[in-house]
Image 1 (tube, rainbow, N blue to C red):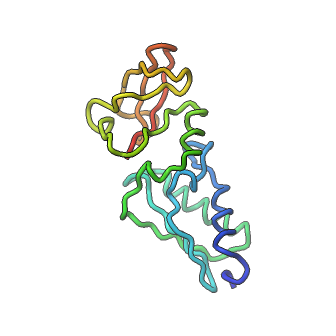
Image 2: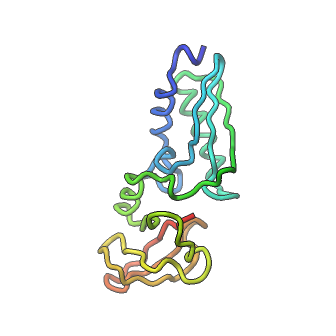
Length: 166
């Protein structure tokens, strides 16, 4: 009996230990991809939303969720993928954004109103995560993954990635 052995809070706690496979300093909970946890008598149902359509990490998210919950004693786990509402960087915790900055990735600007980086100009100001300069230049719409853009700091001359607002 899953719902008698575990609380939903415990399952959320278990999931909060799973790192993002592409950015291991933040968890899948901090990233905001886990939308819901439901427990029935026989299984845990975990609802997740991809950061964007075609995100290559989603299969790994699923596998890691199942593995973690199995290791904690929950044998049956269903993963429910939902696409609406679409994931947004607004779902990232403030702690996750600060962890990104400390890791060397410029976090998304507050709110998703500035969609410029998805098109041509990029956001007006992307602060360098290393020296905190506002004098930065967009070098490429895409960094190591499609959800990040590549910038260079005009002051410290270091390249860095910016986690795009979506």
